[in-house]
Image (cartoon, rainbow, N blue to C red; front, side):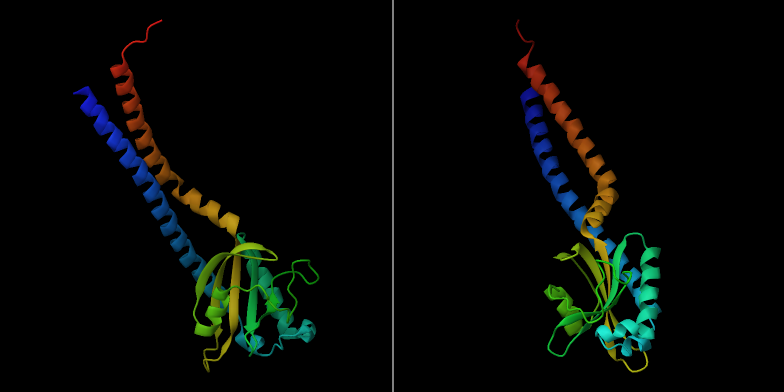
Length: 218
């Protein structure tokens, strides 16, 4: 009877361990998806606040540095980035006729080592960025790595409401490490409950094993 009980405990322990692994992965993916939707909503709110006429008047070149529209957009992006402590970079991208993605304006202070001046090409832009331009759709991509680090990025097309003109893409970067820790912090409680179940069954298994082994001889 005890051997049968121990066998059942073993099956239950193995099954629960596999279930914990599977449920942890599913919970991680589900939480990641929810966070991406939230990030896209945040980026969408920022995109709606952008005066697209100012974007239309940008040249996408170094000459924009003295353009009042560029300066106002840069100030606005800087203000909006600081309003969200988890956002590291906020910027507007354009794309040339030959498919090269470039920076229109970003949220970094002028002269900062991390600033992307107007017209700077984004040579390492991943395929997912190009897809957003080609398909004119929003997306939350990453983690992707570039010269500045590793990021999860929300991309929202800027479309003029009056004429439907596609003006560019607003991008919001969240540090990939911060992103992963946020996911773990959200699912930690659920993982903890599952691990407690594993520990309880594991303790029962050990108790049965010791009972079967009997008292040790000196």
